[in-house]
Image (cartoon, rainbow, N blue to C red; front, side, top):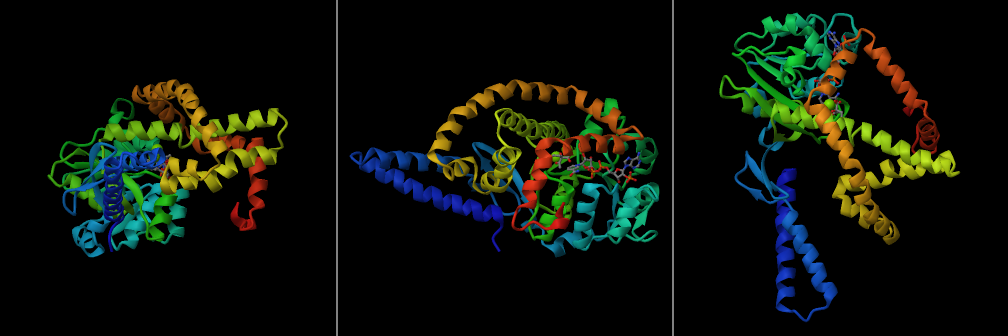
Length: 410
Ligand SMILES: NC(=O)C1=CN([C@@H]2O[C@H](COP(=O)(O)OP(=O)(O)OC[C@H]3O[C@@H](n4cnc5c(N)ncnc54)[C@H](OP(=O)(O)O)[C@@H]3O)[C@@H](O)[C@H]2O)C=CC1
Ligand SMILES: CC[C@](O)(C(C)=O)C(=O)O
Ligand SMILES: [Mg+2]
Ligand SMILES: [Mg+2]
């Protein structure tokens, strides 16, 4: 079966041929109506922005809006090849949070030799047993799992990676590979003190999504997008290994990055549009609606429900212009006028945020906060405060009115 990128690339090539035909015809017939040539110009401009495949199967260089990047796909790693590649390896997943769960179960379902290492009798230990990991067989205390593993996948919380490093470091001996899903620990080494031994490969696969989605997409036969990076290549095979593990844990395609770029973009994105920014923007819009006398139901529908249930999925499917085109001309006119105003107002905030990530302020806050013994309860308390905001209380009622709502789904 043709892979997603191959299919979309050939569609892009077909579209670009179709468009060149339209553009050529338009050039030959200057007397055509203005609207026809406008259409042709728009189509030609769109084709110029569409990715085109160069290179051979296995490694693909795609043109992302004018910048060429190499990508790696799952379709180049059939299961038999993957299993053969790792036949002498034991993947030791250290930590069983959201990523440990998703990556571990996917690699196990892919037929690889996977074990889990977590604190004995903690919350993760309990969760791992629930997911079918067996104490003494596939579930071990952290140090024991590291000793048994060849690929040590450090999926403890970022703060815990730093706290546990003095105990873990001596166990990362030659022949093992050290793996992360974030650049955090090694990039901010002045703060975390995580300095990998010089004689092992150090690699990264960072799924661009929650560990829960890493699992659900895999089960649906789809795949999460991930980035890969190499910090240290002792064997000359580090990148290949990163790609193979990326496939093993459920990635659909992977793009290349560095540890620095991964951690900067990740900390920035989650504080920005992915989480912090969107909560702030939703809340701001909701508050002004409420101040102007709109009901909670109306304010929530106009802010969150319509966004998540109707418009954002359209952006996900076919891009922003597709979503705009699916809305009224009235909406299109207004949104086109206001988008640059929001952009201008937000750029300084994003500049400030990027700087706060780059200079380590965000890292130090995170380490300080998440190293406290009460970090779980403290986070839970703040999240309960969000849950208790009027907007999200109204949201519960709105969701309960969805025809497909099931009472146990909240
Ligand atoms: N969450 C996500 O979807 C994503 C996460 N990542 C990265 O993946 C890595 C793992 O993140 P995530 O899965 O969210 O895990 P969490 O941040 O939720 O960490 C959970 C794990 O850390 C363990 N842990 C916490 N404190 C300690 C400690 N002091 N000693 C020993 N173990 C401890 C917990 O064990 P216990 O239950 O025993 O406390 C648990 O197994 C991080 O580097 C993160 O940045 C990357 C992409 C997305
Ligand atoms: C957006 C949050 C995230 O970076 C992620 C799911 O990718 C995280 O750290 O959990
Ligand atoms: Mg993150
Ligand atoms: Mg992320």
